[in-house]
Amino acid sequence: MRHPSFLAALWAVLLCIGLPLHAQDNAATRTLELPASGKPAARGGLQFIGNATVLIRYGDLTILTDPNFLHKGDHVHLGYGLKSQRLTDPAIPFDKLPPFDLVLLSHLHGDHFDQLVQNKLRRDVPIVTTAEAAKGLREMGFEQPQPLQHWQSIDIRKGNTRLRITAMPARHGPPGGAVALPETMGAMLDFGGDGKTPAYRMYISGDTLVYEDIEEIPKRYPDIDLALLHLGGTRILGVVKVTMDGKDGVKMLQLVAPHHAIPIHYNDYDVFKSPLSEFQQEVKAAGLEGKVTYLRHGDSYSFRSKKP
Ligand SMILES: [Zn+2]
Image (cartoon, helix red, strand yellow):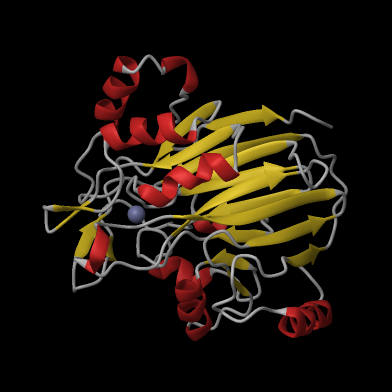
């Protein structure tokens, strides 16, 4: 547990150097310094908890993505009075999670930040997310949302471990606001390295369709080591597609060209209409089987960075 006065000081500093919610992507990158624990960098890994919830470890840092810890049979809210039922259990209950340093949140939807997490997550944990979600989180009493516009970055330091998180474009639905879905971001996680070339680069798609802005990602961020793809082919009212289905997942793979990929967000809710088998068939047809690892809830994946 961090010392409260340290946190107050940290927050005061962040407030002083903090950027306005609508800062441009060329604005100065903030730095968030966290207390060290002294573990060596260069080794990393992740554990898939369920839906889009993943525990990512690299050196000294542990990151929790899109925390969703409701259980099978529980309902989440998706706006418009729409609800969706969870079909799976998280691999680890919220109360059994190991300590983590920050939360990375793609958007504020019930299947990514649920009511249990709203109640139980400690108020001082930094949450890197969209401006819209940051506003909602502040209203819920969270003290350290870290809003990012698409292409804007935040640097995280903990002991010798370095991480730069950059918000990637994502659009949770069709163009033109036909369905008013929340502001959403993908994320590029550049671990370690010399400031120019990361030691390990991980892309998390967030809930998005493949659209023109995604084409910019591999131009600005080539050489992605690992991509976590939010699939599911989610359909609102059974009709409007708001996340990638199996075909879109392969299109995304071909576009951002990661060395390796892991699908997540594929079987947890009754609004998901594209089973993982559809993605598997498309991967096979595209000859990309060697690039994809399939994780079940609770499974882990480890990686070693290219540089020490
Ligand atoms: Zn979702």
